[in-house]
Image 1 (cartoon, helix red, strand yellow):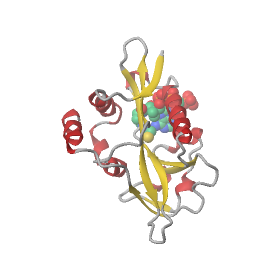
Image 2 (spheres, helix red, strand yellow):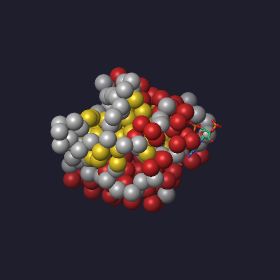
Image 3 (tube, helix red, strand yellow):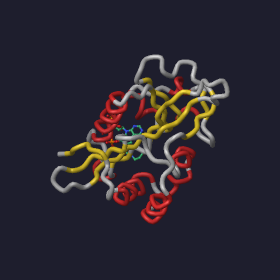
Image 4 (tube, helix red, strand yellow):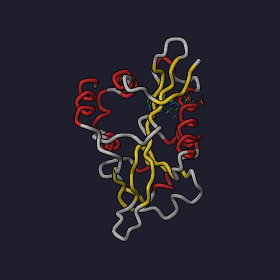
Length: 185
Ligand SMILES: CC(C)(COP(=O)(O)OP(=O)(O)OC[C@H]1O[C@@H](n2cnc3c(N)ncnc32)[C@H](O)[C@@H]1OP(=O)(O)O)[C@@H](O)C(=O)NCCC(=O)NCCS
């Protein structure tokens, strides 16, 4: 009934509309949203679940490049930050969010990424193996409820000893992409 594929170039407006329906207008002011602003997601990790019959976007998830730690001693490590994950409100609680999450984490591992962080409801993300303890010594560049800030190791030990500031490192989005996104939201 659904196919998980890379988001198409013309699907940004539909994805933003879905995110508005799922999260409401306050979503742009969260620390994680500010970190994503003006950046491109990691290659191959903008995923949507499309209905096979109508090709409509039913769910979306994207992952973004970040660096963990201040890097003053050259010890910053590469990671991915996941979000937002959202399922169209009319299609929630049928396993689609879980399917998209597992697909995204498997794809990230296949692409050689080592760990993923996110800010979200622990009661939902713990089923995939996310733990707040793995992000306990990291901090984001803005307010966040610490228990909602979680990590997951694609490679065992990849978050061991990670500490310090998390900063976005993905490629900058061309200005035209930014203005189209602003129009779409
Ligand atoms: C969160 C979300 C992605 C989950 O996707 P989904 O397809 O609806 O959920 P799934 O079918 O994968 O999983 C359903 C289970 O997750 C639970 N669940 C759903 N949203 C949850 C949440 N925010 N917190 C805790 N548990 C949640 C359901 O109670 C259900 O539990 P059960 O398996 O014990 O019955 C989706 O509901 C969504 O987009 N919500 C709006 C955005 C949001 O609230 N995000 C909060 C997480 S940061």
